[in-house]
Image: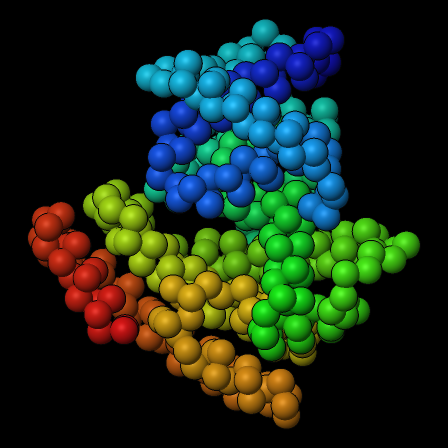
Length: 355
């Protein structure tokens, strides 16, 4: 298919519009800190600024004010169809849109993120491949995006890896490793040749790009783990969890199963004995999830001294078995009554049990 001249500009405008509509509906779900960080990363992406690049604060502030004004105008508006070469596509018809873009070096993603927020992005296609029955798209420079910036996204059998959010996440963690006493983070960056210190030497950007691509492999393994471990009722459970805390909990259970699955990233790092990747798997666990499986962090603390891979694998298996039991109990509780109040009460009970 030969696409008409100017189609890209029209498509970018259409995707950006839908991103703004989504943000206009959901910006209030974010904390002030989370909202400002999301807007800042959007500004840097829109202006081609690397995570460590300097920005003019006055320009950022003006850009944020324009974005917020646009949100006010779009409140209550619906998403628009996207137009490619005279054909109209529904904004969530991801497979058809990417089919139309296949020869154009572009990739499009759409789905639902945290808080069930509709999320869209359009990017230059870095690469595509098929792994374990999944179509894997790696997205480079992003041309349109919304506040939600997950580095990995799975929709059906399609997996999207987004290098820009990945790089931003790793840069934030690199700064954290220098500012805080986080053994796993320090270990991870040291394994990849990054030592604490503010200096950005001549090949820093190239090495950080290599690190980003390496970490993309961890994200890919996580998404494949999610695909393999998926259960059909889980989407219904998320709909029933209509408050932030319940949704955080259910997403954490799903993430932990994927991470500790035999098809997940921790298992691969153990098999390949990749110390840096294992360290990132552990270091990037947030506090909420860390409470749910402390055994892995405890095993890593020992591993950092004696490199006992079996100890880590034993901890992985323990956590995996526990999370599977928890997931099955949640599903059975939901299927038994399908009463939202009873289901949310059960979630609260599980959270108390886990401490």
